[in-house]
Amino acid sequence: MQEGVGIRRARLEDVGHLTALQHAAQIGVDVGWQEVAPWHSWLSDTGMFTYVAEREDFLGVVVAGLAGESVLQDGQTGEIIAWFVQPEAWGQKLGRKLLVHGVSVLKRCLFNRAVIWIPDKARRAESIAVGLNFNVTGMERTRNLASGSVNEICFQLDLDDYF
Image 1 (cartoon, rainbow, N blue to C red):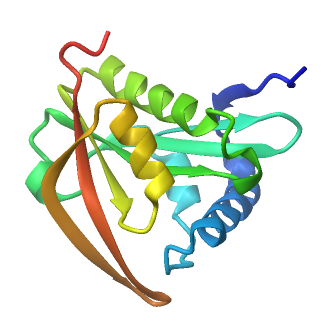
Image 2 (image 1 turned 180 degrees about the vertical axis):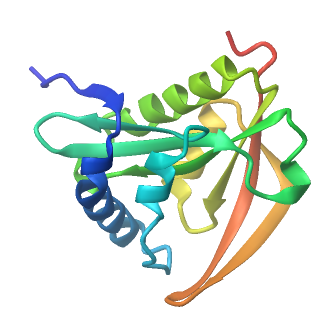
């Protein structure tokens, strides 16, 4: 029998665990960047919603909030800002569960659309998003970071009929 996984709102004292989780997830996909997300800022921002999936350790995280790209800041679009799952938890539908949770948060915040930027090398993440009816928008971006460049593809989900 598989142990249950709980999802809860992340707290400021979780920053170290979130950083370790992010690092493990990035190494598992080799997305080409190693910068640490601004966890402390995200957890302090009342407009950002960060949830962790855990058993004894953190298995995944999802962060949802306002869309970050200016072209998407229309008051109607929310964004899955970060979404990481420990490689050891892959294949357990945990990534899907976290993404659904993030999308549900955006719907409860009354957004009409959800977007997510997925690194072009993250095929598993892309497959999960497409399986949840996210569609490619045609927008792409390259983030130039100190550790390297990351090419990302934007996916969108219409939330009007989500639930």
